Amino acid sequence: MTDRIRVALEVAPKRSFATAIDWPGWSRAGKTPEAALQTLLAYGIRYAPVAERAGQRLEVPGSVDVIDIIERLEGGSGTEFGVPGVPASAEGAPVDAADLGRLTALLRAAWETFDNAAAAAVGVTLRLGPRGGGRSLDKVIGHVRDAEVAYLGQLGARPPDGAADPADGMDRIRAAFLEALRARVAGEALPNPRRTKNPWSPRYAVRRSAWHALDHAWELEDRSTPAT
Image (cartoon, rainbow, N blue to C red; front, side, top):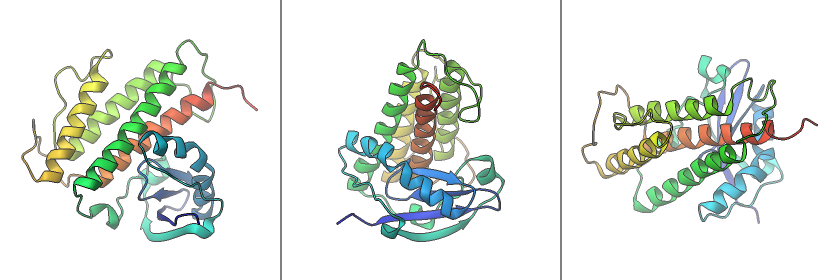
C-alpha cells in the first residue's frame, strides 16, 4: 500500500503551491491548487532519487487519492512570484535527534542533486525561455549561493568568512547552515549570531533550502536537454 502523503496547500489568486510536509524540497506550483497537486505528483519520480540518496524510501503516489491536505495556507505576493513562502503549522513542531538526522540527510541530498546538475551543465548551452529564463550557469550557482546566505540569516546566523568565494563559499555556507540548524534544535547559542526578527523554524528552513536547491537543479536538467 502506498504511504499517505501529507500536503500543505499555499493558495494565492494566481498561483498555488503544494508541499509534501514530510519530504523537504518536494514542493511544486500550479495556477490552481488542483494544478499544483498534479504537478507535485508528476515530480514525485524526480524527487524519489533524492529521497533514496538520503537513505529514505519514497513510493511515488499515482493519484491524489493518497494525499492528505493537512493545511490550507493563505499565500501572497511571494507565492505568486514563485516562492512557497508561508510556513505550515506542522513545521513548528519540535525536532528530536531522529528528526534532525532525517531532515539533514534529505537536505544534503537536495544540495548534492543541485551540485550534480550544475556539474553536468558545465560546457552545455542552456536553453532559454520560460523554464529558467536566461541565467547563465554561473549566475544560477551564484543565485543559489546568495539564497543560502539569506536562509542562514533566517535561522539567526551570519554568513561565514569567504561565503562569497565562488571556489568554496557554498561549502562554507552549508556547513554554517547545518551548525546553526543543530544549535537551534539543541537550544544552544548560535555561532556568529545576528538579530533576526521572527526566525524561521528548523523544519521550514530545511524545506526552503531543499526546495530552492531542487528547483534550480531541475531547471538546469531541463535546460540542458533538447526541447520537445
